[in-house]
Image (cartoon, rainbow, N blue to C red; front, side, top):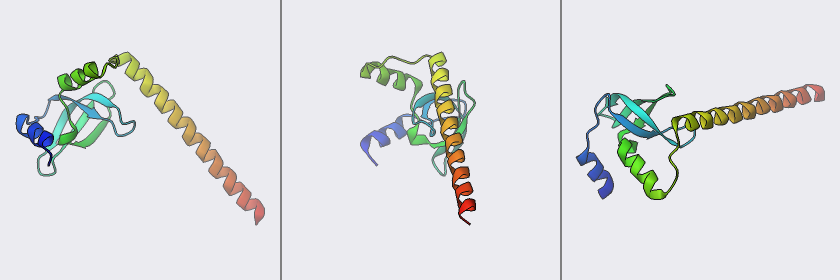
Length: 119
């Protein structure tokens, strides 16, 4: 275990109801979340993303303090994204994903149709 991880574990113990920043597995972006349940045995937490309602189980080591994440954004010089912008970005992501899925289904149907014709 690296020093940073050991330091993070020793300096903060998460509790149910804590606000944190967590990475959403669908897009790899960090969003504000609330801890709903903690599994000490596996070192994981069940979280719900604020404003979205998406729930996920994530390792405790991947959680960050809300202030820590904001500080990192300020240090990196990137402009903080407002909640409204995040919702718009997530909507765009979901639209692209749905279009891609629809296109793939269409391709699969076409392949099946082609196979029927060949028989």
